[in-house]
Image (cartoon, rainbow, N blue to C red; front, top):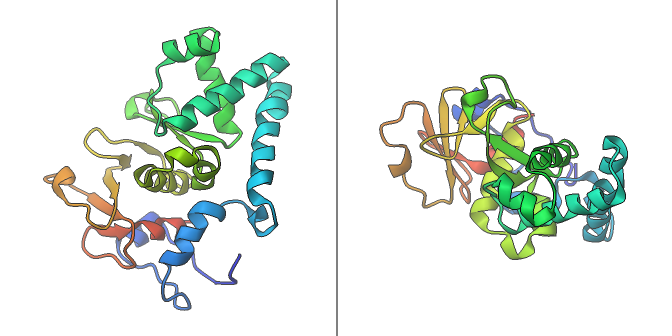
Length: 235
């Protein structure tokens, strides 16, 4: 969209089989880094992108969600505080009791607040597989919805490992049911994914069938090593 580059969409199996190809793009990594910081929303083409993104976040938390969920203004402020807490420590391991104390609300309300913020496209909750049906498992970690939000809301916490995991989850959950892996980062069906940099080793997934290393900072894959940027072409 930003650079007038045509690319096909590839199902997960094709990505894992190294079938991804963008003939007119010889070096995808510089554009991928650009995307992570400013490419998620179409209005990033406009000036004052960072300011506008902050305005949209505030409007969503203070007006849109309270209006939709019939909340009062003070609850909207608590949503904003909750998102700030999550942003400071993503991927966030939720402790409902401590969050409830911090926000001065019932423990039972925290799950509802997180669901509203998730449905508004600001966070993504990674669940375990115990629910059986999509979206019903216990929440294991909470991520910001996409990497642009990391650089906007959590500048001091834009740790590269978190950025990589956030991108993978953000892209793959559109077409797949992504849950937490008991031994690695993510599980999609019977495939295990460990996300890391170009020096990531195989140790974490040794002895596991259908296991893949997803590496940032590489242009092409080999064997069970898949470039992180290629998962952005799944839809």
